[in-house]
Amino acid sequence: MDLGLDSFSYYMHWRHGGQTIDQLLDRVHGMGLAALQININGPRHRALTGTTVEHFRRVGDRAKELGIALEVASAGTDPSKLRLVLELARQLGAEVVRTTVSEQGSEEVIKRAAVALGQVAPEYEEVGIALAIENHEDLTAAQVVDLIERIDSPAVGAVYDSGNSLPFYQDPVEEARLLLPYIRTTHIKDHALVRDGAVVWSVGTPLGLGRIPLAEIVDVLQTAPRLSRIMTQVCYGYAVRMPPPPKNVPALALYEPIDRPTDSRVIWTPSTDGKHGYLEPDLAHLDAAAGHVETGVAYVRDLISR
Image (cartoon, rainbow, N blue to C red; front, side, top):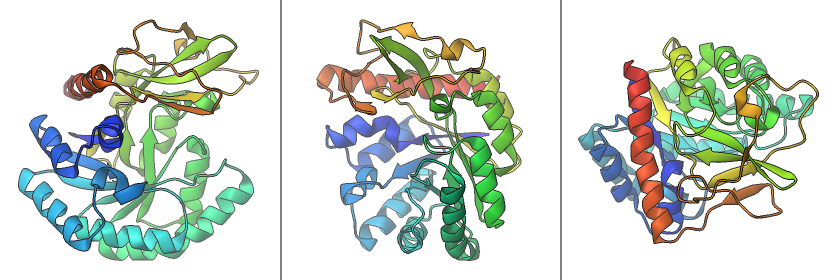
């Protein structure tokens, strides 16, 4: 099983530090990784840091020279947008496009998404690029499976994210097993629940310092029939507010909140009234974040090779 990286791991570096796609490719190559998922959701296509066909082709050529397979991270179900993303992915030479439903899951949302994604699935199939739907903070794994089966296309699969089960109070190992036949790519991250007064946050941590059972998850993923690489996503500096717990919360240490950590360079917790929190870093936090990516990659590499 190969190992890759999702560009969100360096979100602070391209959002606040001016990191370019070439610098990101250099980092990925320097860690000996086989793949990079490039997030394009934002100005100048975010981590791709460019908008022209010439730029896309040059990035694709450079990635190929470095031996780095590419994936694209987009969002939404609008067919016209996903056709543009497909062309961008084709110019990059990408193998997978990740997308999200971007609405809280319901029968109506899933029905509408199945119709929209079903319109573009044949075009993805024709060029051999997978369209992978993430169990984001909008759909459970069961809802993702339902959506994939309604579309019923060999081009359409799943993105398994090890941290996105938390706001639904699901067992992330069971979510991996449920998605297993459909998984095309992953976001392997670590989180912990942090209590801050009356609020509980699901906080991204350095891998191995949170409470997600990553060793068990990686063992499950290594049996996925359509997965050739595991993509790491380090979410230090990101948090989502947890909703009130349901009556039946899984009996896992994962769902036992810890007190707010004191060293924000290790585990950062927001102070905000919003649903999400993003760290706006100084140089010390940028350095810490880069270090967490390197140790996170090493951590997952060790899990794969056990």
